[in-house]
Image 1 (cartoon, rainbow, N blue to C red):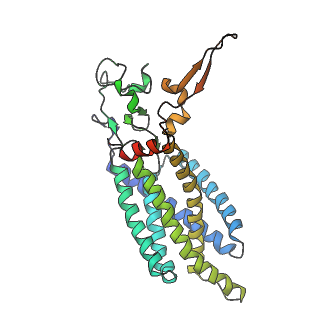
Image 2 (image 1 turned 90 degrees about the vertical axis):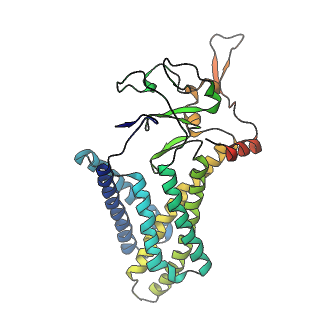
Image 3 (image 1 turned 30 degrees about the vertical axis):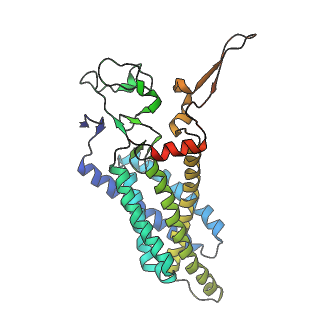
Amino acid sequence: MEDPRRGRRRRDPWRSISRSTVSFLCVCFAHFALYLLSSFFHSFNIITLLFLSVIVLLGLTVIGRRCKKLFGVRGSAPAFVFMNILFVWSVYVVVIRQATSLLLDTIFNAEIIILLIGLYRIISGDPGFVNYEPISNTETYPEESELPTSDIYEGSPFVESSLLLQRVRYCKHCHAYVKGFDHHCPAFGNCIGQNNHLLFIVLLAGFITAEACYILGASQIVTTSQTLDGDGQKVGWTVTLATSTMIFSILQVLWQAAFLAWHIYCVCFNIRTDEWLHWKQYPEFQYVIHPQLETGTTTRFRNPYDKGIWQNLKEFIEAKG
């Protein structure tokens, strides 16, 4: 069924439970694989372990996709994120916390609580959906018409919208128009639009901060274990678990930092990810050059929304749905 107000399909609770179960199993397999890797190659340096971990995780991804096609099972990305947070938090409480300072412990636990609250808000919140009414009761969605993606449908027939400058775009995943649409985030199961774009960036920064705190605490245990290992003493399961989760956190920080840097760049120059990738679909980004001595025209990119970094940042922070 669909929500007529947003154009989004309502979620079946049993389907959500089954997909969450699949995500739970994926989290267990991923961390168990990293644990085995850290156990067998505990004497390797961290760079080598990171490289091997990437290979292992990519292999698990390929296997997961094959299982999806073979058995028709599919996990929930938001549930996967949520369960990873709980798993790392549990390891921290059982293993890492004893080696951290009170300040680091306070910061990490506060960050985890904030992340869980923010995760719930961004998953369940409204990114800036714009109402529309389908032409008929068929399953035809607005993007199947000849309407440009930048336009909105508020009734019948489709009309050129005055909200073009508010940058309302169509999300094919949610089957809805979103104001200030940046992209559809699979990890959060929701669009990133004007209402939650700032929250999205804050969450990215929060993930990086929490994982950096975890890495700092886990590295103290791993460094101590390397000294013990050099003296011929056996490394226990707690050290191996600290190593595997530290590697996982480092990999997370690497891609999240790159992703955060990209979004900060977009905010500074007032452009959305969808607009940057598909600017040829949006007329306002097209600058047509008519050469005088040659035949044909050339289309180049221009950003009509860029008002300077400081003004762009001000508008982004003050943006309201």
